[in-house]
Length: 288
Image 1 (tube, rainbow, N blue to C red):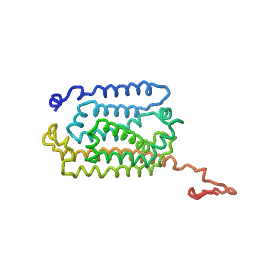
Image 2 (cartoon, rainbow, N blue to C red):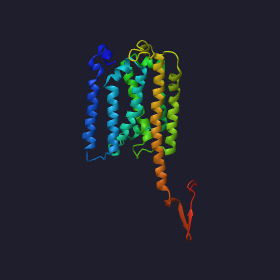
Image 3 (cartoon, rainbow, N blue to C red):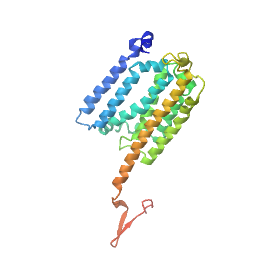
Image 4 (tube, one colour):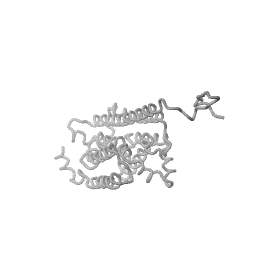
């Protein structure tokens, strides 16, 4: 496989130096400005999240994987997209200290735009809806006729994905987020929205991408264009469900821990005293 790629593509196309430099600069900035900074507290888990995200990004963008996904296998392109939006992005958000987010994301100049873009239901529909539309064959072919259109669409998807994960992770306490149960429902809806396009590719029996059909079997002999599309549908659903399931599991653990901490505590806000008798008020009852 590598010999074939080296014969048909330049070394620079296979091992993209600009992506390697870009990722290297991000790692250097994180080490110097975040890890070594006295202003922020960075846990071992956050460091692990960051470097896992950067290594994954390097593999899918700065190695022959990118050429294979662009020119030969639709399933590999889908894998690149899935890893970017369902693994790299949430890990990067988790790796950023709260103090850094307060300093650069949540201040008086950005509060309004962040509040609008991270509105739960708008971000849910925007990212998952746009990603579903992106994978519709006619739309996909139209977008990839122009490199400029491809870049613009992927930037829009990236921004919308960031704000969707902001809702799920809720990295800033200052942003009024959803309750744990609503976040769980949010994740469920996100998985439902992407379900049709994933199942479409799994069950499809016709080739929809001439650009991939013409080179079918070049990289993997016997791997037809239909198999490629079916694999893409499976990759999209598995990566999305795995990512959302992990988020759901973390939310469930945090919710359970919060309930355990509340257990046995006295709710002073809803207690009144009358002639030495303690009266517990109904939390749901409106006050006069």
